[in-house]
Image 1: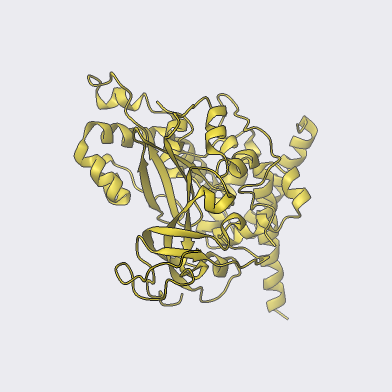
Image 2: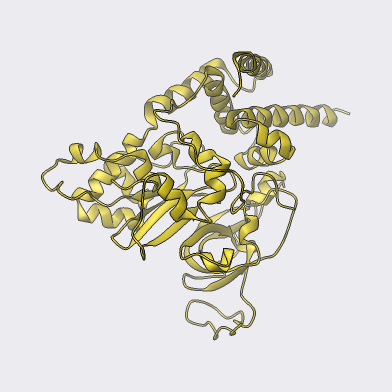
Length: 92
Length: 112
Length: 196
């Protein structure tokens, strides 16, 4: 039951496309997402392994349709929401 | 975190990856499951990613090995090598090589 | 391609998330700015290039670097401890008979401390799926035609080690200073998708 991220050896993704003179971030929101993730891991809100897991849990169609930092955004939303749910659950 | 488990393999040892097929987070790619390779290096001991991702209170801490595979053993063809960094519980000794201590205590490998 | 509309919708989603997390006390604006400043000013392939130039100029350093890169990096004022956690670094040397190339098939592990954030192609499914299976064909697409018989090792980073390629020193560079040598080193050379 390999997950959608586990692409080593798969066929069909086509040639490797290289963007000439690529900027580090393509939009300001990508930089914000990048910074959010590092800050949240540093704070111990979640670990990098949980973060990777949250990306891998995306439905395959959504994973493949999303850009790299859209996947990050999704994972941060999911993990911080799950954390909130767990805390609310603990109050019961 | 748990106490680190003892190092079981040494550089030069032949190892076989487990043919497990979990639907949760793991760092053993599908292309290298149930495959035989050789230990290149012991990289230190690290919390098992599978456990950390599942928020286990006491993740297992295991040695992680750089293991090299021949392309032919992964894909049935190819001349190159591929390496992976694999936690100890992903690995076992290939059948017929016994469970003796490495690196000099290995028995002869079975011819398959 | 995503149009302006989609892009602004994502930007709005990020703003909402950021506001929520700041409101919950999980991050501050200052922390986010500090992270970005550190990445944009500190992490770039110039770091990796300095390591390579030193290794080309100093055989002793090269030996120490290949044996234990974490221990050798402080000699050039660098370290792998600046990120989220200290990572093990392994530097792999290209030779006349052996070429090395890096990938992370499961996600996008990359030596950010030495190379900066990775390029999009490194994170693409096309690269991740193919380079472990047919490295020669992928490298040829990058314009790197390896001679027949040259051995290739593909390093798939799957745990807490990060890798960097030590490219071969170009011919005819015997007179160059370390600073001049560093200018010859490209990010693709450090990943292994180009020779220098």
